[in-house]
Image 1 (cartoon, rainbow, N blue to C red):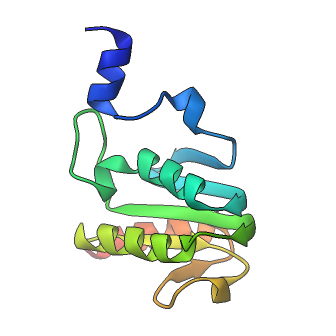
Image 2 (image 1 turned 90 degrees about the vertical axis):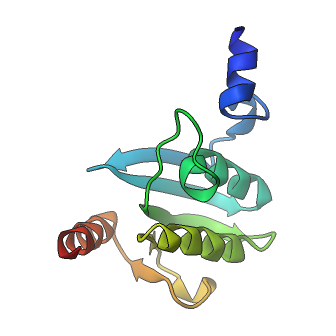
Image 3 (image 1 turned 30 degrees about the vertical axis):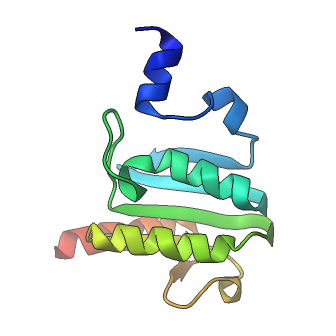
Length: 136
């Protein structure tokens, strides 16, 4: 199977180098996904978010991990467009169906729909996830 065919089978859509414009970054802290978003959070960024969290937001696919907890760092976001706060609420609800949650690191919690657990630092959010995991 060619590399391009394998990519379409696993991920669908375009190659990664065509998709990521530098406004989003993914890392793991103690097996907790941390998605950092900067600049304008718009439909393209939401698409990249779905791509990174595909195993959790869509049907589980081969080679995609399904996470039930995630942290999104929005401290560097300067503008929300294209109903992206609603997209975050939908992502949060998907993770809650998996018995987890989407925690938000932000200095502007008023820009988000109600119901989000917000923190001012990534460390506080990581500690909250660890505590929630410990209680289960």
